[in-house]
Length: 303
Ligand code: F6P
Image (cartoon, rainbow, N blue to C red; front, side, top):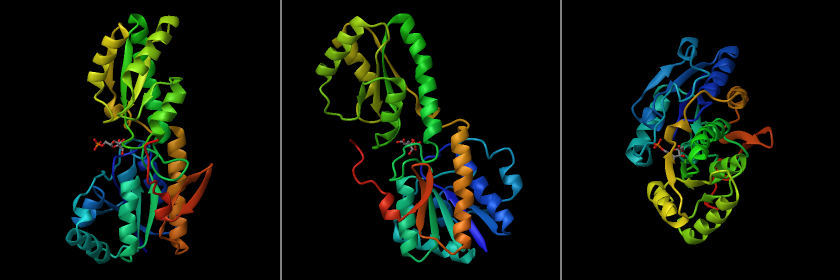
């Protein structure tokens, strides 16, 4: 039997741990494992490589993805999609495991409907699927909280306010969790928020306490540099803007993401050996559960 695995969408810390879990189970059951390089584009371009221990050595606890990720516009086009299917068949791949977020799962639906055996594993810092947890989320939260703690040291020294851009695309899960961990009530996830009202509230609280105000902004909702200027004008004290970028998504996965990643990877192989495919395998309330792909997609993400 031959299994292939790919990572798609944005990389997520823990993807390599999932691949390691898949690899270990494949070793145990003498299954050949192939990696597809660069997500769905790799399927189209026939980029299959055999995964051996040497591919993983020193990498399984690193962030990023050793298989590289990709957001494939071509995969959505019938000509390229057919090419991808043809390559899966000509490489004799029995089952494909895909790791990623909601765009990735949509790709899995198309593959399943084309008769390909596929299992999806949620791996995204966005936590944008209908599971209680997606791999990489814990690491990203920790990365952000640590970065904001550092920023707060400098803000406190000057009593500046700060506007911080947080990833998550159109999903508020990451920004809301981080806000709770940082004990800040100021988050902007809606471009129509009344900034006058918010600035007044912040000013009043700032006058009565020593902690600098931190406003978290969901990416692309408002320009953070402009927002810092607006707040400086409206509150009467200085503001700085911070775009954390890949500091949020990079770095070594947390112990939780490694442990859970490994376990979901090896469990996926166990299902394949029982000839069970066509679902996403993820965590709900501390348990690994199977869900139909359609059930995992959240339609309206901005709260
Ligand atoms: O999906 C993960 C994510 O980090 C989102 O939070 C963000 O919107 C997007 O990827 C950024 O994409 P890129 O790394 O391609 O700029």
